[in-house]
Structures are given as structure tokens and as C-alpha cells.
Length: 599
Ligand code: ADP
Ligand code: ASP
Ligand code: MG
Image (cartoon, rainbow, N blue to C red; front, side, top):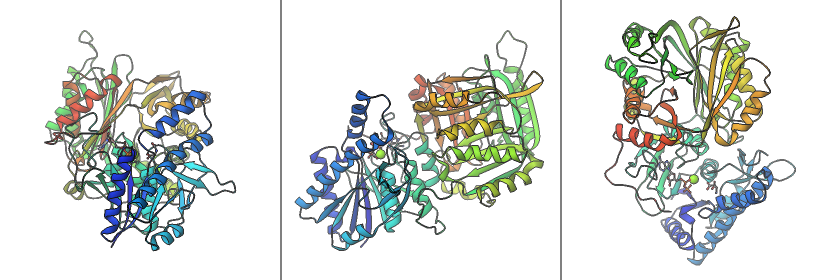
């Protein structure tokens, strides 16, 4: 007999018939001798309908009233589901987030769970009842008991948090697709079902646009070792297992606000190679990295920042012993890469040996804007200049001079109260995962570029500091390679992406910074296409294949940012879906059957 938490999403409970079908499945699970806690979402598109109702009254509703409104959706489902269970002769009781003691921060519309008091649920379970809990909502712990919501898609998080606090044997997420697929089947019907995926890969995919799981749910599963599976509400097929490493025991207090950073990582003996003024047109990155892959050189970070006029800079790092080889390739290709055929000026190659990469890693940084800013601030206070920045959802990496390494490690370990963690051996990672597990598309981001930021310690810290103060989450931060001397002061560009809805707030925040850069440029028409796979570590040629797939479709790359297990390219928005399809095909991710998605 097992204790199982089952979560059913909006489409799965979208009508009375579907609620009855789900009730049948729950009943079946208890009849097999299991104890079941059910978490449900609002029916069908209810949450969207409620959002639209509010928009008809005001374009700027208060977050508190939105929580009051949106939390009603789930409450309808718990009552109906419980009635359907009782009708089948299954004892059951519905409870709201507050009634089961899901205590959250007082942050409306994006509250994090602080703790869950499982006593009441346990009492009902002991009586043989199924407990049906409203997902997505909680209650604040302060004197005023405020209803809060966890953010869109948050029912997954409610379910996994309940599973962690009840120490359930399994948490099953039932949805409208057969499990986690290589990409969104609504965009690519040939997407293939995965049998399993690691938490780290799923964290990246979820944060890069695969909404099948809320990233915070994956984070909790990883931190507490919850056995998580994503399955179809309409079939008995096994679905996809989300595998987490065996975690260190940790307290259930402060559930979602435990340490944001798990550790500091350090890679020495790297070299940075930059190509300046390469033409801003499709096929350039493909050509460069194709040639590098051909020479079997493994590239680590790749960064292409925003273009300047009609040319770009592309920078990458490699381990030092292959840097001569990588440089030779870059030198050989540079004469061919002219901004314009009529121009005599060719791309310039810069090599810097003896750099190091220092990273902070941890799933807790998702949606917590202050973490990257704190890293930049810490380095600034230690007077360490950041030469390159590349971020992913769960990691921020900075390239710095190697001789500053020890000081950087010490400062960061102290600031985040963590240790330096040894990196897993490449062989271990590669064995476990394919180079590309899945691909994702995010159409809801905007790109913000800050031109001519003074190249001195502290600039990144103050830029991302003001954004963090306003709770604006930024993503894919990159700092360009090209250094321009303006009035005797070296400057570089910094670009990043933010959620589309936060663009104006981000610009306002940046404008409060009186000096340090020249201008802020916004591009809302972007799409971010990403490939994710833990097995890409140590495998030359993956980036090249990605860029080639885009080049074949004549899609221009506006920005490139990488981490060990993902590569993201920003492309024009209207090319997003085409890019996703091309990349999915290039990595041969298609399955035999197409996936039908119910409405
Ligand atoms: P629920 O209401 O059950 O929580 P969601 O709509 O939040 O369901 O998430 C399921 C949807 O996620 C699918 O219908 C699919 O369109 C989308 N999706 C995006 N990326 C993926 C992926 N890689 N695998 C599966 N589904 C995906
Ligand atoms: N009903 C909420 C939403 O649509 C939460 C969820 O379904 O996970 O975002
Ligand atoms: Mg969902």
C-alpha cells in the first residue's frame, strides 16, 4: 500500500464528464489499497477567463484582488470532484489551500510555499477518505490571513510540495499529453515521449518554455527526492519519470525558500577566443562552430551578444590545451567572414589564455532576481572584473582572470554560505543522458540591450541590482566581448531577456541609474529556442548542429547563450516555430506516432 499524491490539470478536469473519468481513476487507485491525496487545477480555461474578466474592469488590477479572484477556480473543481467521488461510494473531502495549511509568503500572485501542516490531511486519510486539495493557492502566515496564489501553472508545485511534506511514495502529475515529450506537441506533433528525464534537464526545459511542469515543482522534487512522474489522464501508459539524485536530508520548514545557491563551481585553465565584427547574417555561427567541431574541439561557453551595426561578436571558451587548435580554426575562417563582401575589413580574432570560469549553481535561483545581482556585487566588492557573463535558469557563470580565482571562490562561498563543489566527471554525465533530450520555445520574452556600459567592477551589479529591487526576473544575461573606448573609458554592451510583461518596468528601473551606460534598446519581437541535454557535456559538434539547422532555414541568430547542459538562441519572433521544428528534426527527436492534444 502506498501513499500517492495525484494532480490533475485543467484540461483533465475541464468538464463534468472528465471529472467523472478522473474520479473513476482515483477510486480505482484506492481500491488497489492505496491512500490518495488529489490536487486539482481550475476547470479548463477558467483561470484565463477570470483574468480576462478582471482586464475588462481594469488594466492594472491589484495583485491581492487577482489572488482573491483566481483562487476561486480551483475551489469549484475540488467540490465537484469530491461529489463525483462520493457518488461512486468513495469517501472524500475537499479542502482549500488554507484548510490544509499550505502557508506561503505574503507575496500575492507569486507566493512561495513556506511550510505545510499535514496533520489535518493525515486525520482524514486515516479515516479512509480521499483528500481533494485546491492547487495553486495558499495562505500567508502573518496576522492577516491572506489568500495567495503561487503563480500560473502552480498546481504542480502544490502537488509536489504536498508529496514532500507527507513523504508520499509517489507524486503523479496527470495531464493532457502522454508525458514529457521532446518538445511541445501542439507545435511539433511528431514530438516523442521520453521514458525519463533528469531533474536538472527538466528544470532547464520547464524554465525555457516547456509548460508541462512548473519549474518550482521540479525544484522541490529535486530538493526532497520526491518520486515524480508525468502521465496522461486518458490512458494507463507509464508516462515519464523525472529522476532526482538522492538529496541530503533537509528540513521542511522554509520549503521553497531554502538556499538559492547549492554551491560554487570553478573551471580553471580556460582560454577565451573572440571573433569581433563577424557579419550579422544567417549561417555565420554554423560555419565557425562547424569547423571547430570538425577539428573535434569541445567548446564550453558560447556567447553572441547583440549586434552593432551589421556585425556581431562571438566569443567562446575552450580548455587551454586545445586553445591553439581553436585559435587556428578561428584565424583560418576570419578572412572569409567580412561584414560586407565589398569591405576589406575582416573579423578580428582575440585570444586570451589563462581565464577561469566561476559559477554559482542552484535550482532555488529560479524566479529570484536578486541572486545574479548578488554574485556580481560580491565580485565587484572583491574588485574582480567580469569579462564574460552567461546565465541559465539554474546557473550564473562569469569569466574572470585566472589569478583572481581564489579570491572569487572565497568571496562567493562566503556570500552564499556554500562550499566549492567538485564538478562531476564528464563520463558520468554522458553515460546517463543523450546529448539533446528536448527542445523548447519561449515566445513570451523581450530582449533588452544596454549599450556602452563602462567596463569596470560593479556595473553589472548595479544594473541587475535595480532590476532585482523591483522583483524583475531576468534571464539569459550576456555581456559582449567588444570593448569600445568612449571618452577614454572602455565600455561593453550587456544584454538580457525578460518576460514580455516586465519590459516597461525593467526600462523604468534602468532609467533610474543616472550614469554608467549610454542607452537602453528593447526588442519585443524575439523568440528563444533552446536545446537541453546533460549528455552534451564533452561532446563537440552539438552547438554546430544547432546553428546549422537554423542556417539551413535562413534564420538569423540574434543572441547565443549557453550553459553546460543547454544552448539558447534568440531569433526573430516570426521565425520561432520554424526554428523549433528545424532543430527538433536536426537532432532526430521525432517519434513514430504523432501526439494528439485535446482542446
Ligand atoms: P495542465 O493543465 O495539465 O497543467 P498544461 O497546459 O499546464 O497542463 O501543460 C501541458 C501542456 O504543456 C501540453 O498540452 C503541451 O502543449 C505543453 N508542452 C510544452 N512543452 C511540452 C513538452 N516538452 N512535453 C509535453 N508537453 C509540453
Ligand atoms: N489554474 C492555475 C493556472 O491556470 C494553476 C494551474 O493550473 O496549475 O495557472
Ligand atoms: Mg500546468
